[in-house]
Length: 231
Image 1 (cartoon, helix red, strand yellow):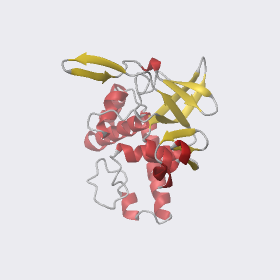
Image 2 (image 1 turned 90 degrees about the vertical axis):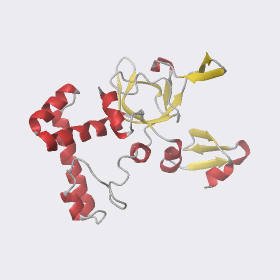
Image 3 (image 1 turned 120 degrees about the vertical axis):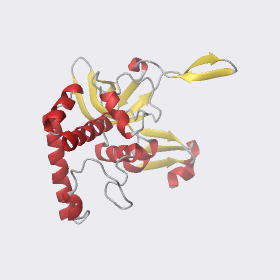
């Protein structure tokens, strides 16, 4: 059900993000509340296995953060008054101008959650023959994907995550907000993040000119021309 909700922000594609799944769930719940009331919103929560108390907590948290930002002079008081509006016709310069852009949202998530970063080791590519050539296929299960935390070593995606069945993470990097150890070390909430968000918002960057690599925090290594590192 969470996978169904997560397509809301991306027009049908998968951003491979539990955090964006939560955003999509909240946006859907908020629209129902405003359109047809709390009774239907409760049914919405039941249908999608969502905690209504959690949705209310997010709503209150948004109001509080908006008020803090207003008090600090970052946003206007008029925006605070309208923060609960269910759908926004966003104009240039509004605080939520890029709220529907998954890559921008995930860059912010990467910045906020670093150094909770995972390196992805995708399985070897597999190809299916077709008339006139072949195309790469994605694994149907996430079991062959390996994830590594800097301190804990190998970790595993929890079955409750929207990323649990994913067979390949294109960027090669995930950030997470929750980790627990039972039979294995499980990551419960994680998001695939763009490479540039790691380069821009993670730790210190070292350029290894002779190797044509960029190293972030002496751990995350990227192949790139030296000029990219300098930029």
